[in-house]
Every structure is written in structure tokens, then in C-alpha cells.
Image (cartoon, helix red, strand yellow):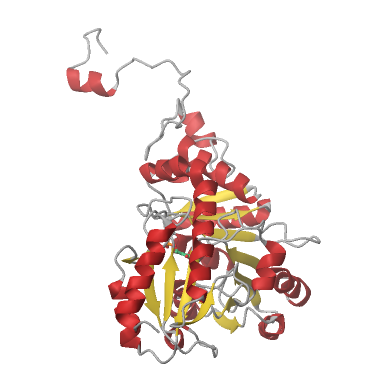
Length: 400
Ligand SMILES: *Cc1c(COP(=O)(O)O)cnc(C)c1O
């Protein structure tokens, strides 16, 4: 090239200025990229992404994703973490990575619904079979374990009905009856704070966890993201290669949002836990509610298992309306709420409510007859939330 100075568009793109690198502040810098530069062709050929020793392409990580992955690994006592575009995609990535034609997968009957839909609608087409077990009965799990089963899903507590299983008994059952199977836990509810899934005691731990970072880690109700965490390097390689071949990436602004929210994760989780306990207690005193499903509340299914494993609980509870109320009255109760908004998901600042009917959610028999209303407690003042529940209950269900 001649010594002529570059034209302005070229100059703006290839500007030689480099800011001093010692910048250090509360929030780490955000590194965004599809293309990542190599100094020469040899570096292009040599760099590896699978051990995270270098940067090769945005899909394979930037300093920002590596930082979130490390912090999430520390939170849960894992060694390796992968990020996925949603909690559900973290789940389906595990399924795809670990199962092949002829294999079986086993899920609790109260599993997060879309996880079961994936197994029933997609994996079945690929010759992968599934069985459901009653998570409150280890014998029911033992009964569905066979040599074909390569993956066992756990969830604590169950979706919507919040039964807390004896995780230790379930893991022990898999280790004894199906040592070939990987044990995977959807740990979204525990958020890495309620209990340590890789150390359930007596040499027992799950092999991997998935999280919907969408919930408590993001905390804002404005991010969709998931993660997969494990300890074993071989398992990590299997998961990382499948994850890479599926082409799963996350937006770097979203990663930044989660990094920004993580420092307050524990404070928010405990505040929402405290609020949910007060609301659960109040709900338990109302004659219109037949049952309060909330692991930290005595009498809730699996409360003793929660007690033996956990010190905290998330901000979720479900009330079963007395079966004398119709489904329409259940809907009217939710419609009458003013502070609680009607929406899926949870973990953000706004309290949310959704009505469910157990008969439409479960394959195995359930004891629930009345409308179930799942409440996720946000960060509003708890007395205002109780007042909101009281007015909605009185207007839709009558005073007694
Ligand atoms: C929300 C949720 C998911 C899915 O997360 P998305 O980010 O919404 O896909 C998976 N498991 C559990 C237990 C959840 O609550």
C-alpha cells in the first residue's frame, strides 16, 4: 500500500487507537462478537474452543460468556457450564446430547411440562422411549429403570404442584438399578441456593443440572436464557459438542443483564422466600383454600424431604381452591387480582398468578380436585400482596 492515509470509512473501522487496558469497575466489560480476529493463519488453525483456552468464534464464547459460566459454576459447585438461549433449550440439549435411537429416558410425572412435550413429540419420532415415575416414591422410579434407560430427570420440587421429592433416595435408586444412566436435575427452583445438587451427601450427587436463568438469576422478567452445569470433564465434552453442533448462542447484552443481576441473587431469593412463607401461612388460614402447596410449609407434600436438604425455599406457592368452587370461579379469582399479574414464568419483581387444572397436567393420578393457582411472589411489599389476595378471594369466592 502507498503511504496515502486511509479514507475515512476505512479509518473509522481500522482506527489504531487502543484504550489503556487497566479499566476496572463494578460491572465487567461486555465483549460482543460473531467474528473473532486471529493474528495469522497458524493461530486460526491452532486455536481450540472446546477447552475454552482461546476465542475462535462468537458462538464458542467471548470473555463475557466465560465470566458468566464461571460464576454459575461456582454458585452451584459445578466445574463446567454451558449457556443456552432458554431454560427449555438447555433441557432439550441434554436430551439430544445423551440419547440415541433405542435409548430410554425417565421423567417425574410432575416435570416441567414442555420437557415432557419434547420427549413425547420429538424424541419419540427418533425411536427414543420414555417412562414417567411418581417422584414421591422411589419404588416407582425403580420400576421404570431398565438397561435402555440412559437419562433420568429429577426436578425438585415438581412443576406447579411443588411436591418435594427425596432426592437422595431417587439418586441412590438410579445408581443401584441403572448405573449406566446419567442423572440430570432441573434445578431452576433451587437456583444453586436452596441446596447443593452435586453434594447431596454420602457420595451422592447428580451428574448435571439445568437452570432457567430466565427466572431468579436474571431476576428482571426480561431475559430468556438457560444453563447446563456438570463436574465430569467427559460428560462436559459430550454436552459441549452437541451444544456446538446445534448452534446454540446467547445474546451478549442478555449475558450482561444476568451478570448484572447475579450479585443480588441471594438477597432477592431470600426476600422472595420470606414473603412466600408469610403468604403461604396466610393462605393456609383461609377456608376457600383446601391446600397450600409450598415445600417450606408443614403438611405440604415432601416437606420433610425439603427440611432435611434445604435451608431456604424459592418464592413460589400454589393454592388449591376448595373443590366446591367451579373452574370458572377459579379463573374469576385470578382475574380479580390487581397486583398479581397473569403471566407465565417467575423470578422477577412482579408477582404473578396462573390457574391450572391438575387433571390436564398429569398422566398419573393426583389428589388435586380443585383449581390450582400458582403464585410467584415478586418484590412488592408482602402486606400489599396479602391484601390483594384477600380482596380477590372475597370478590370471586365469597367471604367464607
Ligand atoms: C421456566 C422453567 C424452564 C424453562 O425456562 P425458559 O427459559 O422459559 O425456557 C425449565 N424448567 C423449569 C423448572 C422452569 O421453571
